[in-house]
Length: 348
Image 1 (cartoon, rainbow, N blue to C red):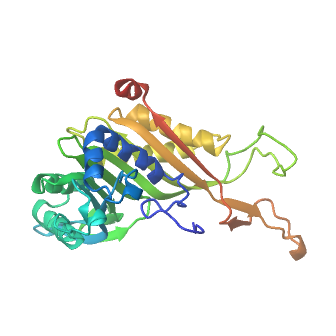
Image 2 (cartoon, rainbow, N blue to C red):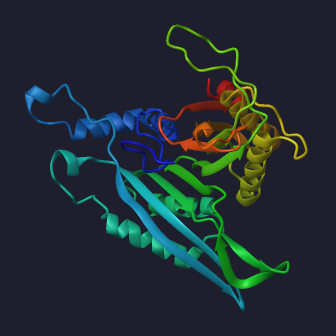
Image 3 (tube, helix red, strand yellow):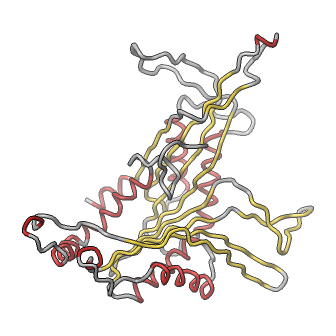
């Protein structure tokens, strides 16, 4: 679905401050607050010498390499396994002299960061993108004592092994866009990693069992109520793990993916009625949290794709909701973040 204006690099949502990546900023601030004294010390170290600017401080700076693309092939005899990924790696250092004084002595070149990612793919392989992101974060934290924070974002191209008459092919694959898998790992010095995974660009549609009625009306409301409409959407789903030991990331991703499809569509013979996009979002999140106890929080963005019945009377034809025209813009969007209460209590 084409989106007008500037979009967020990570999630392809409009860059209005309301996308999932904006929510991620809140999580980054948790790291900043956790190391508040360190960050304020850094800010003072690089504070401008001018008296006019002595009341200013740098709260956060980071830099990195985006869109590092690679294909990793693992060959086990005749059987080949592949992972094609795109990685973004950002660092935060213990000083900001490169910004305030033009001193680059502590700066790790982004080309070095790219080379490190390629070397890690070669040496460690890519079992899952989550483990690969952990490897990247662990490498920079352990290799550079002046790196205070690392963030690695990775998304995986949806290649699936071809099958012929039910027999998996040894080395051939097909691109199956049933949602793009991605993950993000953040880690501070002397801190535990924060791991999240997700699905984006997942397009879903059902031709009935959806409606919208009983909504607020005023003088600008022209939308008619309906109990039978097409529900078509593009979904972004992201979830955060709690304690990240011994998690089967592949299994969790499959469970979440299946839960999204099941909650959206309902039983195969009759479906499930959706009174609104918002209720569908909640149904998805509730099912995910019920099935995966390791997930502490989930956020879902659902962008609706409108279809309008086209008038065929001029052609001498009746149109019983059989021929419809997609309308890309404007489009509605709803977002919800759902978290287990125990997580909020633990934070408090």
